[in-house]
Amino acid sequence: MTDRLGELSAAGVAVWLDDLSRPRLESGGLDQLRREKHVVGVTTNPTIFAKALSDASSYDGQLRDLALRGVTVEEAVRMLTTYDVRWAADVMKPAYEASAGVDGRVSIEVDPRLAHETEKTIAEAKSLWWLVDRPNLFIKIPATRAGLPAITATLAQGISVNVTLIFSLQRYAEVMDAFLAGLEQAKANGHDLTRIGSVASFFVSRVDTEVDKRLDKIGSEEAKALKGKAAIANAQLAYERYAEVFSSNRWQALADAGAHPQRPLWASTSTKNPDFRDVIYVEELIAPGVVNTMPEPTIHAYADHGETRGDTVTGRYADARKVLDDLAKLGIEYDDVVDTLEREGVEKFEASWLELLQTVENQLSNATNA
Image (tube, rainbow, N blue to C red; front, side, top):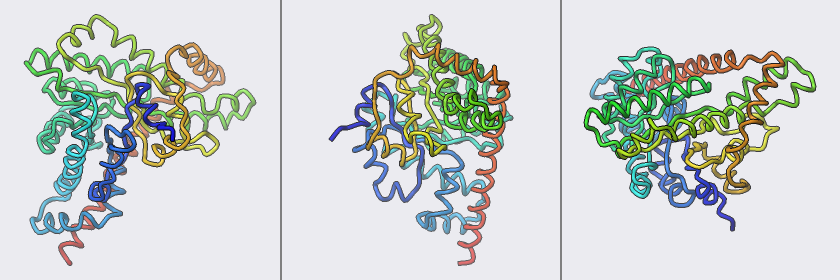
C-alpha cells in the first residue's frame, strides 16, 4: 500500500493533529497516530477542549477532586486542560527527540479573552509554561495587535510560542518580526536558542469561506470562477514572505547561534465546502519546512487518497497574486476580509472559552451534589 502520509512528510510537511481529548490519550489513539500516521505534533484550542469536556466521562474523577477542593471554575479549567496537554507532550516526546526539538510539540492557548491585553497575555503564557512543565510545549498567542509584543516578550524568556489566528500577509510579516526580536532578546538574556521553538499558524479554509460568501453575492461568471482560490493563494504568498525573511542576514545571525526558524503552520485545513476536494488544503500547500495541522478525518482522508505532487507552493506566487488582484477588481477588499476574519476568530474562541467555563461549572456542581 502507498504510504501517502509518509510521502507528504518526506516532501517537507510535518503532519500534526488538530485535536486532543482524554479518551484519545487513555485509549492510546494519539500514540497510534504518531506511530502509524506520521503525526508529529498536536494543536488544541478552546473549541476542542469545550467539545472534549462536554462529551467524555473520563474527566469525572478529576472533576470530583476539584469540586471537593472548592477550586474556582477557571482554575478547574486550567487543571483539566493542562493535565491533557502534559500527557500529550509525553506521548509526543519520541517525535520531539527524533527531530532535535523541532517537532513533537503540543500547543495550549492563553485565555482568548486576553487577546487585546499584552501584559496579561505574557503573564498567562509564563503561568502555562510553568504549569505544564514540558520542553515540547507551545504556548498559543493570537496574532492581534496586542499579541505581537506579547509574542516577543514570551520568546525572550525562553518560552516556545505558537502564534495563532493569522489571516493577513501584513500581520504575518509583523509576526515574523516579533519572532526575530524575541529570539534576539532571548539570546541576549542567555537562553539556549536550540531549545526555543515557534510556528506561525496561518488560517486557510476560513479565508475561502468568507471570500466565497462575498463572491456568491456578486454572482457573476467571473466571481464563480474565483471560488475556492483565495485561501490557497493567500497561504502561498505567506510562504513567499517566509522564504524571504528566513534567508535574510538578520535571520542568519540567529541561525548561527542555533535557532530554528519559525515554520509556517497551515491551520483550519479541513474543507468546509463539500464541493471541494476534501484534502485540497493539504495537497495545494506542500512545501519544505511547513506544518499542516489537520483534524483526524482529514489525516485519514489524505492517507486514503491524498496526492503528494512535490512542492505545490514555490514558484506559484505570480498566479497567487493574480487571484488577489482579480478579487480586488470585483470589489472584494483584502484588508476588509482579513480584518473581519481576525475579529471573528477572536470572538469565536472567546465564545468557546465561555462555553468551556460553563461546561466545567456545571460538571463541578454535579460532582459536588453526587
